[in-house]
Length: 333
Image 1 (cartoon, rainbow, N blue to C red):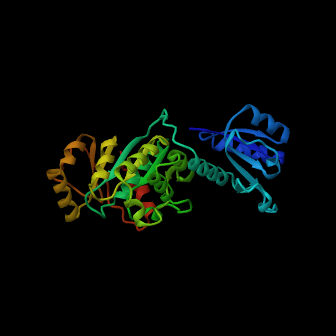
Image 2: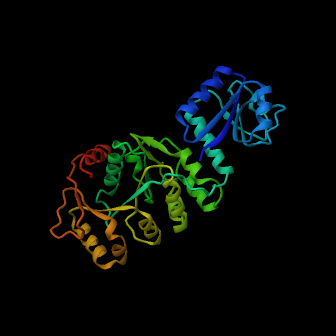
Image 3: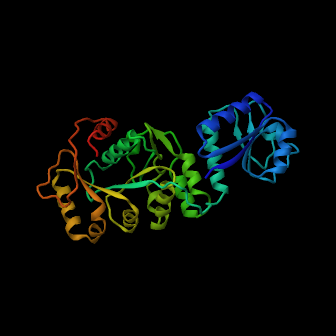
C-alpha cells in the first residue's frame, strides 16, 4: 500500500529536497505531490484527495483540508508552535527525512484502516524453533536471515520470544514492537503501515525493537499473532520467525502457515531428550514433518536423526553474538 502525500512549504529548496529524498528512498510506501505556493496548494486540494499532507505552518491558514485524511504541520524550532493550528499534529522540519517519514507512517497507521487488499508479494515464511532453550536458536535464525539477505532477498526478522535477546544482535534505537501489539489488541488502525514505520534495518535485515515488558507479548491471542505474521509477510520477500521454546496454540497457528521450519538442537542431553519427546510423542510433529529440517547446531551429531533433512552447523567459540550468527550464515543452505 502506498499513501498519497501532499507536501507544501514556501521554502522551495527544502520542499524539493524533501520531495526528492522521499521519492528516492521511500517510493514503495509514499507517492509525493509537491507545491510551494498557496495558490497551487488550493488547486491541488480542490481537484485531488490525499491520504496525508506535510504542510508548512505558513501554508495552513485559509487552506481547505477536507480532502486530506491526515494533515501534519511542518514547523521549525524558531517558530512558536502554540500559534500554529492547534487541531493538527505537528512534526519538526529540518530533521532527518527518514525520521519524518517514519512519524508520518506511524500517524497514518493509527488513523487509517487496513484496506483488506492483499499485496502482490508475500514472503516465504521460515520458522525457527526448538523444544529446548539454549541451543542457539536465535543465532540460527539470524544466520538464515543473513544468508537470504546476502542472496539479495528483502528479509524481515520477527522475534516472538517473551524475553527478547535482540539487543545482543541489533542496535535498539527504534520504537518498540509493543506499539504493534497495542494496535493488534485494539483491533483498529493499519497494522501494515505501522510495521513499515517502526521496523529497523541492520545489514540488510529488517527487525523490530524488543517489547517494553514481558506481558506485552503474552497478552496476544493466537488470532493477534496470526494477524501480525500475515501483515509482516506482505512487507518482505523472506520472513524469519524466531519462536519461543513452547508449543501452545499460538505456536501451532504459526507452524501451520510456515513454508519451512528449522528445528534446532545441540549436543546437550536436555536437547536430545526434549527433541526425542517432541518427535516421537507430539502430534504437531506429524503435521509439520514434511516441511521441517533438523539443524544440528554447535557441532551436534545425531546417529539416528528424526528427519532426513539435516543441516550441520559447527560450534563457533566466540562471545560476540554478531560474529557467531554471521559466521554460521556461511554454513546455512
